[in-house]
Each structure stands twice: as structure tokens, then as C-alpha cells.
Length: 138
Ligand code: FES
Image (cartoon, rainbow, N blue to C red; front, side):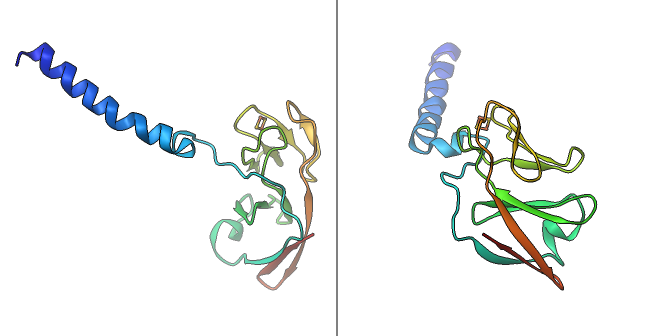
């Protein structure tokens, strides 16, 4: 087997191994996570003494809801799925807004669209802090 023949066979073998991974699980080939629907009847609690919400500017996604702690220390919560095509938004503490990494839509802290292509607001949820327990609810 000469070098060219070897590389051809090895290259095809590697490609053959990688293709089924992307075909079999589209989400494994996508860098953005998605949530398929806007959660309703939301009511859950989070411990904000540890993890992402322990510091101002942190955020996390739980139960299809993105919960953020602003730089001033208040808690905000909106549906995580971008209303354009469902990619999970992230919280930008420096801009105090939610941004979709897929096509760049932006939402205010109340979920209102501030930049397209999304045209529908994110659903805002209520938050109540009791000690270190944050209740997020509809
Ligand atoms: S999926 Fe969010 S802007 Fe397109």
C-alpha cells in the first residue's frame, strides 16, 4: 500500500465514523442548546447561595427558564427559548439583556424584543427571594 492509498483509506474511515454522529444526533452537531416550548405553570425554587446565581451577573437555565442575577443583585427570569427558532438565549450582564447566539435577537430584562429577527417577547416569570431560596413562578 503506498502513501496515497493509505491516506485515502484512513481519510474515508475517519469521515465514515464522523458522519453518523452528526446524522444520528443533530443536537450533537449544534453548538447552541434549544428548548422547544415556553414553559407554563412554572413554579420551582433554586438555592442561590452556590452556583451561577451566587454572584451578580450569573445566570442558569432550569426547567426551560433562564434565571439571571443582575449586576445590581436582583433576580430576573424569562423563558429560555428564543421566540425566533428556539435556541436558548443567554444573559449578558454587561448589557443587562438576553441575547440569542443563533441569529442575534436581543430581549430586555422583561423579555421584550429589542432587536430582531425575533418578533415575539420571551415570557417573563416572577421571582421571590426568601433567604437563599429563590422561587421562580408564573
Ligand atoms: S433562534 Fe434566536 S434569533 Fe434566531
